[in-house]
Image (cartoon, rainbow, N blue to C red; front, side, top):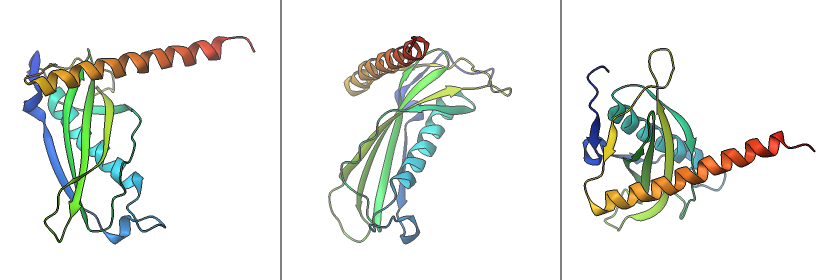
Length: 169
């Protein structure tokens, strides 16, 4: 961890993982549990965060995740993740989830998009500094701008909740 660079490109730790869904992952409606997809999202994002930061990183938050279409048994679910933004010790990881059928050549459908914040931690569980992300493409720069908007919304929401709890009833 002492050899962690001051910055890393978005491409350096980008990751794509695919998963074939199975019967044991279904809910009572016969589609894949949202929690199964969310677990895979967290795992993929965690790998990206650990690779980018050069060590352990823990999930601090997950922004709203809207499922556009259900995932069915036999779908091949694809997770594409990258670092969108970095702070001192935190990183936003974006994950795009798509799916297609295991037994046919069909276009992938967009399942959901998730944004997670990870904090890099040392051996004692204390936050540690992360390399700054260096966007390389126009798409990377757009993701960085939008991540900054999400961050400002998260901070404002947290401040409003704290103020609400401190207000007399």
